[in-house]
Length: 152
Image (cartoon, rainbow, N blue to C red; front, side, top):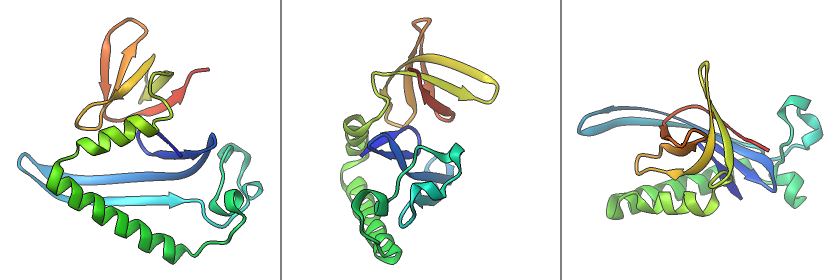
């Protein structure tokens, strides 16, 4: 399993899931977080439109139909464990996991944010989760939002 910043999960170079998060915060507190998760569970990739390829599903990779309710229960339990760990230890373990599972770290990327496009080498993420890129110009830039594409 690999992570493509900021929100995609890949299995064997095929997209398996995507995450979206929205939050509201003040300078000293987080008011709320809404997380949306799209996980390809019980479909065959041939059922997807061509522009959604390459993608995969749990069924495609394992040959086993999976209960979405069991997946949801497992996901929520895992999120609670991560939340409690973050309360105890801070968030450094998330950066360590990202570094380990990153699809793009130390690889050439193109970042698109609105009408602006930057090219460089993805270096990792900072403590706030921003993507760090050494641009082709040599400048170091942080991205909190944007679409990231691997340059081949």
